[in-house]
Image (tube, rainbow, N blue to C red):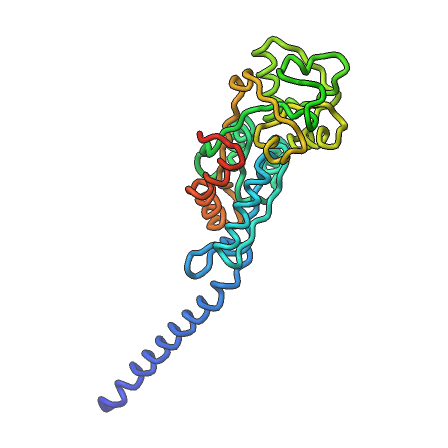
Amino acid sequence: MNRTSRRAPRRLLAGIGAAAVLLAAGACSSGGTGDTGGSGGGATGRPTGTVTVFAAASLQESFTTLGKTFEKRYPGAKVAFNFGGSDSLAAGITGGAPADVFASASPRTMKTVTDAGDAAGTPATFVRNRLEIAALQGNPDHISSLKDLTRSGLKVVLCAETVPCGAATRTALEASGLKLTPVSYEQDVKSALTKVELKEADAAVVYRTDVKAAGGKVEGVEFPESAEAVNDYPIVRLKNAGNASGAKAFLALVNSAEGRKVLGAAGFLTP
């Protein structure tokens, strides 16, 4: 065998190797931009696909605003929200409901998720909230204190004690030594507020952020006992998140200066 014939197989192998590299590169580039689930990250690491966020009902307005900002910042990415009572959301997560982020209205309901091992990392408090009385527009019953809600004939609605709003209300009532029997207990703070907006109740104990979000449909009445029941709001990425990169990007937005501005404008307090 001459020298030329010995070099031929080496050249052939080199050609095959180069072709394999080109095919692999083509496969990577074609799969990076069309991901609508999975890790949610494109070839550049930017979030794509849908980010599913479970959030306390009181966060509805501010998180909806941040969701629109997120989608504008990351074309092709979407945010799907599930707003409700924190206890119900936590139960859904531990029961296997698919979600990427959980924002709770209290550490107690967040603990349900962390105790089940469903959190990725340690939850961080990103805002705080305090209670306020939502009275009928114009406050025709002249409610000026928490004690006024115990008056005979006044129809008052409270959040169920299993949700953070209700637990905080119970703490405030205990701090003031008052007993109050509502006409109904609601499963989330928005449901309690709606009862007053529709004039099905004379007043409800909700968060100050919900009174502000009502935009004049109710009359807000502050009471000093609310200082005894300020709620911390923790947020965390979930362990089994289907869109981990999207979840991280949404948390980054919430904790950014822009996120704090939106939440502050809604009436939330800084941690």
